[in-house]
Length: 391
Ligand SMILES: Cc1ncc(COP(=O)(O)O)c(C=O)c1O
Image 1 (spheres, rainbow, N blue to C red):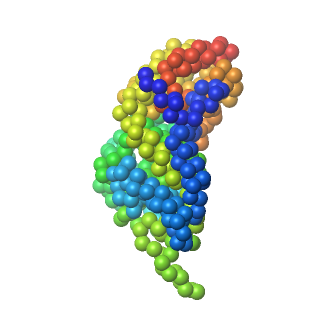
Image 2: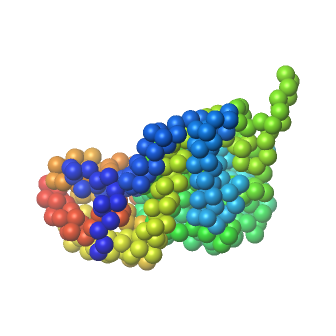
């Protein structure tokens, strides 16, 4: 297994098994941000001096990186704070009528659930796409829910609780064929699997920088040019002209970014995408596969541990595992694992409807990435045994 850990800023304490909450930061990201702050710290698109020009060039270059990374146009991306802001932006930026329908799955993170639920206030009807036991979504089930009134279908490409592989293209095609817009939550997916937006027939796609080795406080929203999305905020940087009683917005992407953006973070996000491209998705997938196989074997040997989600490598799209330890609460297990050398997440993972469906009040979640290895997973198995003996 290749050792990628020197590419990252890795803490010296417990092994980091919480990448689904937030990944570690890649060193080139820190360097890119430090270079902006240290060498040409200035606002962008404002004024004529060299520092603003240099900063603007670095900022603009990130759109080109996104376009290449996802095979889309650089005009189809907007900077947002995170995936959560992106889903709210879509919910706020589309024109809704009473009677419109939105279909959303029952495995969603609250970020891709609450913005749609809130549309009920506008008379929009919410329909739930029910997942199978392992958290997979089916195009057949979706077809049974689609109607002429379906305005938008939103689903995750990878659940943050179960890590199950989702047939994104099949789901998106079914939705598009019935005339609906498609929104995909790629927050967990982008760090692990490639996306080609010429092959994915989706209108909106969102992810956060902090889950893909980048900084916090930045993310990107892809919005296809003909999606009908209007700016959710207006203000400085978005207008061509303003009179005392009207304004005319700029065309294309400028109209979507009101106010001074998170310049350093956006530049850092670009550096994070460069890191992923340099390592390459085939290498990331191979690394994930080895970790998934090892973790499945460790978990299947642990007595008193109930594992949720797919048990086969092919049905996982990232190295993410949720489980419950008999007679030990999820928080207690996480505290013990921290003491035994492993930083895992515990709780409902911002997916209360799914947690409730699993019949528990929370799970322990171990989520791994490039800086983890099989040796750590083997040691984790021993620590888990210690925790399970308490139960
Ligand atoms: C699947 C999924 N969607 C959305 C989000 C929300 O991401 P953020 O908190 O960066 O907005 C998360 C975060 O855990 C997630 O796992």
